[in-house]
Image (tube, rainbow, N blue to C red; front, side, top):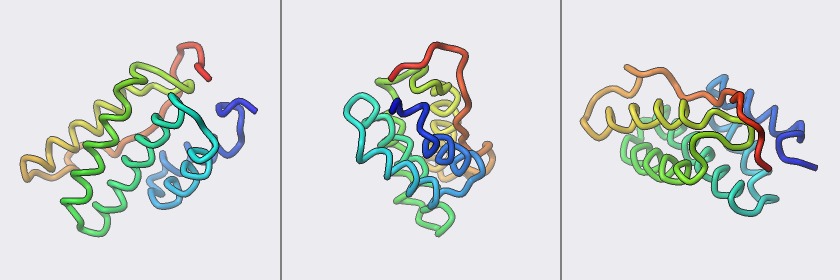
Length: 124
């Protein structure tokens, strides 16, 4: 089954977009184990961004900063879109939140990241 057509992918997106970071991580991780590159690398980046937000919720600024940076790095190869997702929007928000953390600012000055559908053809 194509990843985009997998109902678990839709559930993972909904969890991510609702800010259920830990649950989104679990949902994406299940899919990640079944993928090959480049989708595997992309899902790992999304996972890392979700886990960064778990760290933020728990007050682990250092862990959040590291994982946001790694997640953003893994998104770059798939920009601007992949798996039917607008990755530029995710990249932009995650980058702004990372910059806030690196400058000892408040990442909550920026909206939480979301995964929205793109209008481009779906890869995968």
